[in-house]
Image 1 (cartoon, helix red, strand yellow):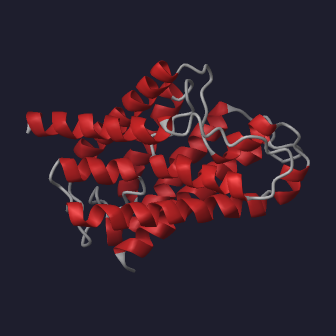
Image 2 (tube, helix red, strand yellow):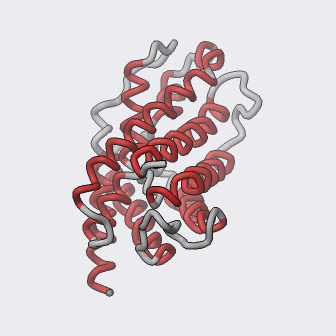
Image 3 (cartoon, rainbow, N blue to C red):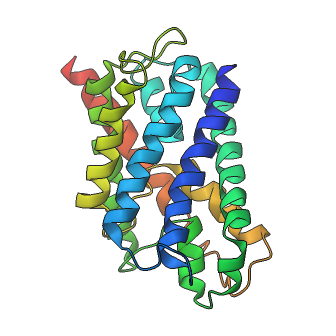
Length: 242
């Protein structure tokens, strides 16, 4: 499998399972309706595990433009590969979101709350204050990228997983995403990944969804800029410490 295809498939699986749990919890008449934040954050952590397990041996399993950019800033990833990785991640996120819509089509049809429909695809603030919202995304993304450097040793090569323990090695990053969601996710829904938010938001805008309402483009820059800024800060501090 090529690195491009690995990033594409890994990100697709991440979004399929991550947005899928939000659909299961929020949409009407699902088996998991109203099962809560613990279910959502747990499944997102496990979705990260699945995506990393598939993609890691071939691409290093970035699955996130903020990870790719952070590693490049730290000198651990070639800048020439950054754009192809981000394109693969975006395409995977688009497909993952489309598959969630296909999977839960009947439940989208039965859900009349546009806010719940949008939340399946992308993040939004609990309290809309752009200054606080971007600070939340910067902090959450900083924690993600900074800790990933220490979990992986910043080693991203095709011949080994970023953690070096085979598929079991994906677990520390899964736990990391889980705890970020539990501890820091209550303000903005912890995008911490530009592709995770932008790809599904684009799909929300394109798909014929009953009661979908606005795609909230006025907010969409927050989950793009925040994670990239947080990743850059994490990489620069990592370089200073090493």
